[in-house]
Image 1 (cartoon, rainbow, N blue to C red):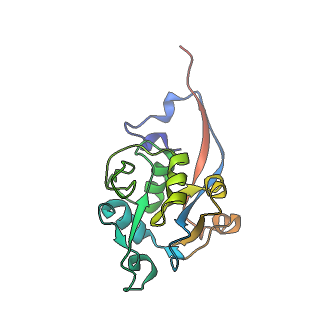
Image 2: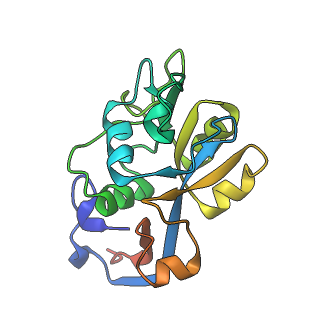
Length: 180
């Protein structure tokens, strides 16, 4: 999605062709067992990405109810994922969270590892204490057990992306490299 944001960065001059195909929205998704959570702010998402881990964050951190002390675990993509690169750019997060390694409780963002989108969605669907970010197709695949929540107070829709009020999206590219 952003060749210059990859690790290591890839110069756009390395491609013969780089065409933007469209806009890819990402949605924050929670397991339906997490009742009361309807929104996540950019600041909450960053804190969950950088501090979620053993013990999780109390659910009250996201729903405002201090009596909700059960943990919430952020489920995220590996560092080379275009989805995660897009999330980092749109959130303004400069630190490099490490997501994905299994622990006794969850696949969390505090541990290093690799978590592809299909596994991320399955973990969110199967863990009552999980929240993460997915593309619309991944959410559709687990709609019976997970649902989208608003991001910074704005629910995803094509209109909210187009008018600039929903900020969690990136461009999909198709690129070719020179044949040597």
